[in-house]
Length: 304
Image 1 (cartoon, helix red, strand yellow):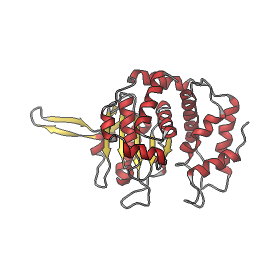
Image 2 (cartoon, helix red, strand yellow):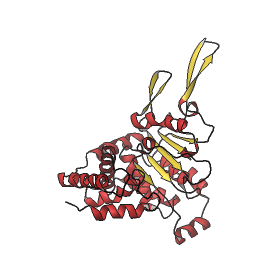
Image 3 (cartoon, helix red, strand yellow):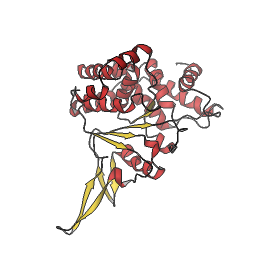
Image 4 (tube, helix red, strand yellow):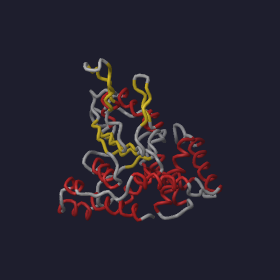
């Protein structure tokens, strides 16, 4: 692992206590040029994690608080008529930043949620017939509350599939929570964080991630996982080819974080829950926990 990546992880662990695995998953998602969905109850540090990553990576950051009355123009921007020049001038929305926090994304209506689709998939937005490129790198961290909470709109499958990983932070363990209660206010600590790398170095690491070697045997393993989900009667529908590409990209990033230039089966298994848990729907929805679902997949598919 590079010194800069090590420093980013170490700095994040000082703020988000007891969540080293989730921090590494979030970084792996960024290195794989993907977008991250964090689904959990309010108050466990979802927004803080996004702030910490943005500051540690030296990225331009914008937070968008999603609400039920938000319109797509509130995200993308709008053209306003200028009396002096007698024409329209485009005022870019908060989407034009390197890292976007889409906070409580499922509180917005489906129409507003869909405003993120083109940006996440193609790193551009088309407004009033004009296509505008977004900054590089471009990364979306979206948080959502559990769908059973009041005032939420479930994300459609097409939107969910744009997220490379979906993770849950969960409650901290007893010792981490004790340190949190007895320590300094987290917001104050975040404001003092220093960037540990520049955007150019991050882009270089993303390119290195793409070059991590995956053997033909591991490609067989990924295909076997995809085939099992499609043929099993346990799932409503199986994982798509895009999910397979996401699994490989995340595994490459996980290997890079461990300082290796080749993917191992353990890398695929480490990121499998994050890749699969928002894409797979069991026949008896809601009865299979995320960690149990991933364990069943790993147990069912043999490593070549």
